[in-house]
Length: 136
Image (tube, rainbow, N blue to C red; front, side):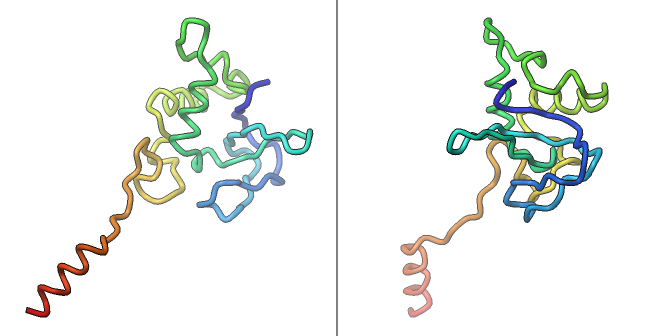
């Protein structure tokens, strides 16, 4: 078993751990991605909707599935072989592209990209310059 897993949700019990999801339930039949976590000697997967998986998680999944030649292989993605062909293609494409497809992404526009756009913050110096210009 690897650190990451992809699968079809078997029930309606798991809640998405992504901050963009407000812990909404991952419905039975949806693709979900799990990250193995251990706390105090106990381990379990923390799940996300496939559409909530960030580019950073995709990058980490790809790194964890490199063969001895350093090439990515789906054989090392836990659960991949259990998915149907369409879902396998969706996962393979996302890992190769480095992000979940736009049509699957549940977060803010562009947030699924490897280097998502960040909101620009006004610098204090710029504000002071602007204030002094208005005073003139």
